[in-house]
Image 1 (cartoon, rainbow, N blue to C red):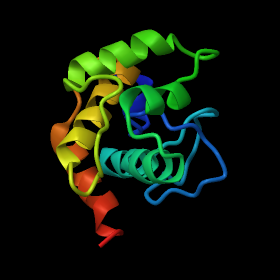
Image 2: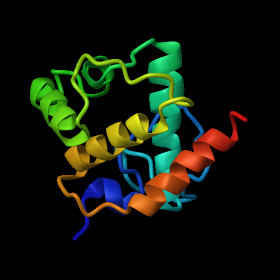
Image 3: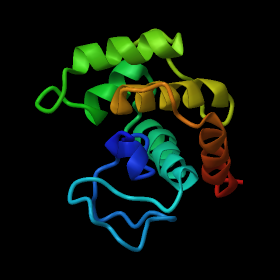
Length: 141
C-alpha cells in the first residue's frame, strides 16, 4: 500500500485549508490532507508553497527555517526532520537555498528530501516532481 501522501498525490502532505489549489481532486475524502488529480499537481502546490509562501512571503530560505514552520515541534520531531532533509539534499540546515529561479536544483532537492521524509520511502516519481516544478514556474514567467 502506498503512503498516504502518495495515495493523495500530495507528496509533501499539504494540509487542507481555504486555499484553492489547481489540480485538486473533485472528491476530497481525506479529512486532513489535500488530494490532487495527479502527482504533478501535488508537486506544483508544494513548490508554490515552498518558493512563494515560505521563501518570498515569510523570508524562510533555509532548510531549518522552512521546516521549523512546516513541521513544528508540537506535531513532529522537527530536529530529526531538519537533519534528515539536510542529509538527503546535501544542503546544510542554515545554508541559504538561493532564489528559486536561479537555483532550481536546490529547491527540487529540498522538495524531494521533504517528500522522502513525509512518505518514508525513496520510491517517488522524479519525473512527476520535475513536471510539477515546471507547472509552478510557468505561472511566474
